[in-house]
Length: 435
Image (cartoon, rainbow, N blue to C red):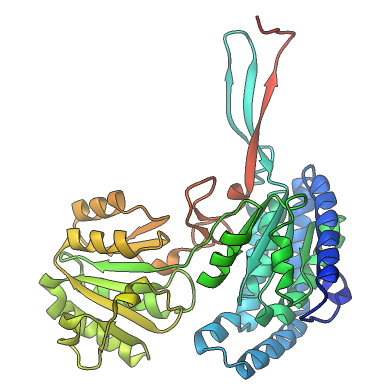
């Protein structure tokens, strides 16, 4: 295996700040140079790099799994909880999904150079609004090593260079994946610095990255609340903020009972540790006594802890009391807060107060209630009769995503290749002068 990962120094912490600064400066310079090449790289070259990287991931799957086993062993020794370890673990199926994700991104239309709009002025000037790369994108993420492949590939397809900073718990896995991406770039004749991984676990590298205004055009933070708060407070570089996923599922009085039961279980328990997992379940009082007990039974039997209001506790003795803080907590674990509400208005009011504006779902057969829900709640993703775990760029047909942007500027919802571009205006004339 060749490339950055093979050449990178062993992960260390507590390095002298000057050494960290110099290392990050070097990554930035290389990324900026690579970005100028990628801006005019052909679609064929970018796709070749992605497909070659996918082949390399499959070829080097044993090495990736071995690196991941070291990460998992260290995480368990550090006492990380089961949900975080679940996010960290790779297996053959997840590695294959990573490789397929790269191939799916290669199949996406190339956004660079796309004409978004075109018009002609009365004076004969022809104006086009054209997609263009952002430049250099810094991605700071935790736990999930597959983000290394997803983020690097999406940035590349959109013509951007990427500097990736993974969490310390996934560094060995990410280095092994990075080696495959480097191999793919080299195969396609693109600069290996087009995608770089910060090769240290030292947190000072994050601080340096947040100050690299000369080299990085935008930073995408993807992680827990503490990471987002730090990046928001310290960054001098513009951000696509991926805030915590306090996601809600609301079962309306006119919901289909079997659908509500099936969708709620999936929304919480398919993968409890992802940002699209439902953290709070709301259900109308009119149907709670009939619909809620089997839902609670399914969840509890699957190992989910339920924290509910007094009305929910009255339906099942195994339900623990909910606190006010629970409504504002992203568990990323097999824990669910449950509240019985008096109809659509109360459900909407609860979500408006406690949501992180990530993803919300309503289960109902009432079209008017569904329309009111999606029109009055201002979250990045709203679903009707579907699991919140569909909050994912791959499920949206974007190939993959860097994250779910919960802000309102430039990009919102899944951040895929189009969201990783800006635009410029090209104006063509034939000698016009402004009077």
